Length: 193
Ligand code: GRF
Image (cartoon, rainbow, N blue to C red; front, side, top):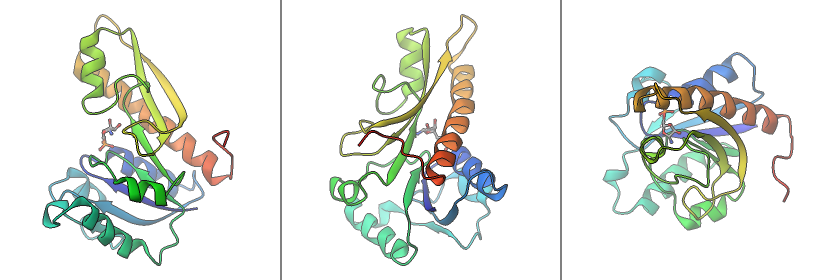
């Protein structure tokens, strides 16, 4: 399985996937890392001179669609089977998502369909729900609305702060993203269609 990983920030999910592949826990090859944000902390963590890393600043393009064209140019000959969004903070266009139907997955820090969109941990915490968690899902045209592949539950306790909750969720994110990739790389069918 040839994968592309898109990220925008800290890159902990991206690095966690890379580690699992390096340690042969997942049978996959990372063909390209794409980062849209030159200030992303994940760039240094990955090692700036990783020759598979393409930092493509979306602000340098007249539209996000043009950014996508540029990314696709790099991906053209790489035979990418799956795009893994790992803390990727831009919304992909409908055209792009349709073209890559069931070939883009994302990790979201809530139990979808609750708390779609940004700051999901904060909104769950402030709402006062007793349980939240994270979700790996396919990406479709609706924000955080694609078919759910896997979820993990996180209990919010009286002692939790937003910070402790965010950390607990991130630990689960790392686990389920790897589980899903293991299954996909073994050719398991993860959705009924
Ligand atoms: C994660 O909580 C992810 O679910 C969300 O953004 C955060 C990124 O974390 N989409 P990282 O960049 O993988 O450390």
